[in-house]
Structures are given as C-alpha cells and as structure tokens.
Image 1 (cartoon, rainbow, N blue to C red):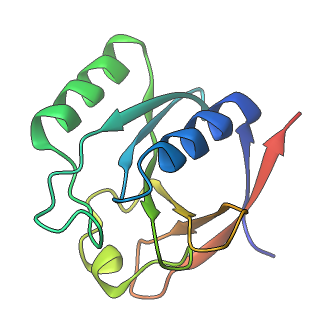
Image 2 (image 1 turned 90 degrees about the vertical axis):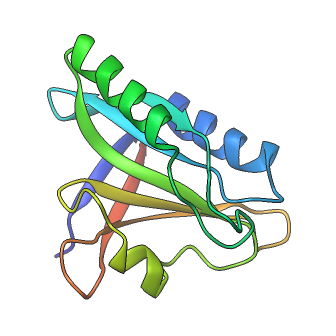
Image 3 (image 1 turned 90 degrees about the horizontal axis):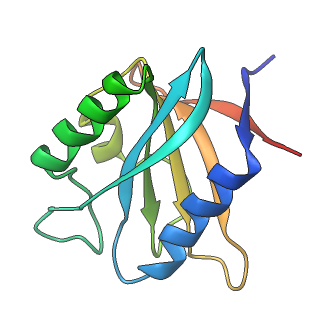
Length: 137
C-alpha cells in the first residue's frame, strides 16, 4: 500500500496559484512542517539557465527559507516545482538532482488544458515511489 500524505487545503491552493501565476517557467520552493504536519510554503526563485524546462533553487533563497523554518520550529517537509508543459512525473534530471531525499517531492503540471495536476513522490532511490496526496478539508 502506498504512503499517504495529507496537505492543508490553503497550502495546496497557494502552491497551485504560484504555478499558475508563472506558467512560462518552472516555479519551485520548499514546504515546512511542524510536528510532521505541513504548515508553510516558501517560494524560492528558479535560477536555472532554462527555467522553462528545468529548476534550480536560488541558493540564497534556499538558505533564507531553511533559516526561517528553523526559527519557526519547522522542518523540511517537501521540495516542490512545476512542469509547465510536461506531466507531473519526475524527470531523470529531477531524480539525479534530488538534494533532500528524505523530503517529499511535489510536482505540479500545467500541461493539461484547464486542470492542474499535482503528484507526490519519494525520490530516495533510482525509482520514484508515488505517494497518495490527500487534501485536508
């Protein structure tokens, strides 16, 4: 049975809104948790050379987000990014570049007409393990 993760509705809405507001590039960021429960969204600038097809978290933005998490008593829960024109599955590059294998990877796809899709994965090995995402009411 696959792992199941519950995400607060407000956090999901904020993440989807961020992806929709920048459909021309991959948006990215971190999600902080308190007591294992995701509570905060930390958008981080994408500094990849080709942001339409790749993401690379801005190092300074990443450091600032992690510092804020520590100050708030949060831990890293997930790393997220969007795929403007690809399905919500990890690319080979996503798998190879994973910096926090203990964290959930969330991918939002804008490639479907009128409907955003979001999927979660554990990328602590060569084969992505999909996680069932549930939205808290």
